[in-house]
Structures are given as structure tokens and as C-alpha cells.
Image (cartoon, rainbow, N blue to C red; front, side, top):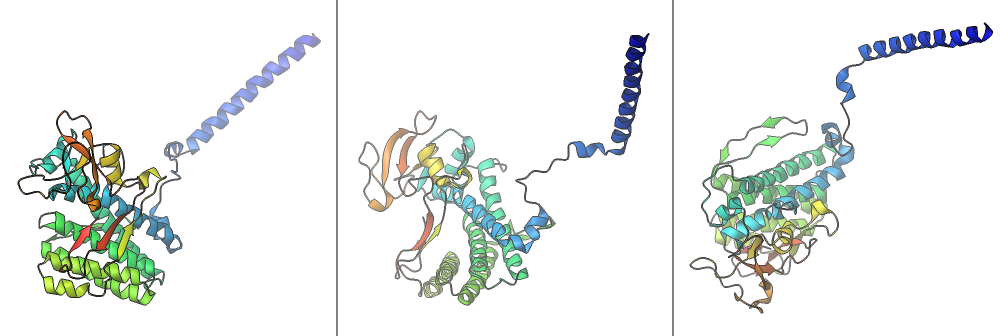
Length: 350
């Protein structure tokens, strides 16, 4: 009997505890909003509140540098494109496409019939991302009382060049929309090419003033080159030459990339040298400039445009591939240089 009573009490107690636990679970679930079960925070996501906090200006500024670098040479990712440097290079017959993606073949052949061409769309969008974030950074520097800092001048210059590249490489009618750090989107009206050049010039003039206050000769020269280039695009050659008169002929401005951080590699190196999708070009088209000798090595004629024959492009049975050596590593900087004090302010994007 004793053993039976001992056996019965635990069983009875277990039933009570089981009922109690079940009741607690039911109450707990009823009191819990089910959305919270899957509402997980992404530690890598920069929220609007973080971006708007002027204590995080350095991180916002780093974002500006990242977006502009990506717009320049592409995302440095497998199957991506070589950015505005590579796309404009194809249009100028400095590169040709040596692989198999029809979107890039269409750009190279000037036969873009699909308005949703993904490579052209990505290049266009990245320039806008760089422009918009640079403008928001300028506003944040002002809100933090740092409107006369060198970083504020850099942001204004990069906004100017992003806008300038839109003017130089896309047809008239590009809209300049904006997205605030609150996420509010304001659609902009279509701009003529001259309006885009004027907007870019206004950014450069602002950067020139800020750089002067900050004592940054480098950013002053970047702004002067931007102003000169916009004037040159508008056909104002004498004014363009005057705008860059104070810039030393040896001046170079670098857009930096990383050897180690995958998302910050040089996209031209990735697309050309690493993947063999695009190729350095020579004598392309009817009147293309002969930059180097085609055929078997050695190919280089001018050490400034060194190139080597490496066979065929990726996946192609016919398109010859030539490796370029301007950007010969994944971390190679991209830069602008003043070529000559007497070259009618002509600027080359390198």
C-alpha cells in the first residue's frame, strides 16, 4: 500500500504540473504578437535613424565613397559590368565586349533595343545612388556644423561628377530625383544635357568654396577640373581652359579600391582582367584609334596603354581578348589627371 501511494502521488502531481504548464503556454502565446516571432534584426542593416544621426557622419561619408567607387568601375562581382568607365569606354572604342551576355553586346554594338537592358540600367542607377547619397551627406555635414570641412567638399565634388557622368553618357531628359534619409522620394523633372551640366557646375562651385575654407588644395583642384570639364562639354573651350589654369599639370586625383574587401575591388580589373568579359580595344570600328598592335604578343605600342593578347574572351569562340594594365590589380586606383596645361582643358578619365 505504501508503495502504491508513493506511485500514485507522482502521477497525480505530474498531471497537475502538465496542466499548469499547458495553461501557461496558452496564455503566453495568446499574449504574444505572432509577427515578433519572425521579426529579426539584421545587424548589417543601417536604419534611417542611424543614417540621420550626425554622430555617424563618418560612416555615411564612407558610404558616399563606396557608392561613387561602384558607379565608376562596377560592383567587382561575377557577371557584373565595368561601371561608367567601362560602358563609356565601349562607346568610345577603348574597349570591346569579348564575352557572351547579349545586354553588353548590345551596348558595344550601339543597338540597344530593350529599354530594360540590365547592365545599362545598373550603371544608370548606381550613378544616381552615388549622386543622391553625396547630396544627403552634404546636408548632414551642414546639420553637424561641418559644412566647411574637407569631407563636405569631397561629397560635393562626387555629387558633381556623378551628375556630370549622367550628362556626358546619357541622352537629354535624365531626371534628378532625390531620396531623403527618412526614405521620402521626390521625383525630379527631366533635365536637358545643359541643365545637368549646370547642376554639376553648381556642385563643383560649392565644393570649390568649401575646399577653400577647409584649406584643401586637392579638393579645390578636383572642383576646378570638374568645372573645366563641364564647360568643355558645353563647347566653351576658352572658359574651360581658364577654369583649370591653376591646376598643376601633374595633378592626379584617385578613387581608391581595396585589395582585400570583395565589395570594394576595382570593377574594371574584375570585368576585364579577371573574368575576360570586356577587352582592351585597338583600331575598333571604321576610324578607331590604334592603341596597341593586334595579334600575337608583344602588343604594346604606347606604354600608357599597355595591353597583352590572352586569347579569346570568356565563352567566346571568335572575340579576341586583350588584357589591360592600367588597372592591373583588384585594388588599383582609378584617377583623373590633368594631361597638359595647353590641351584646351581636355580631361581624361583613367
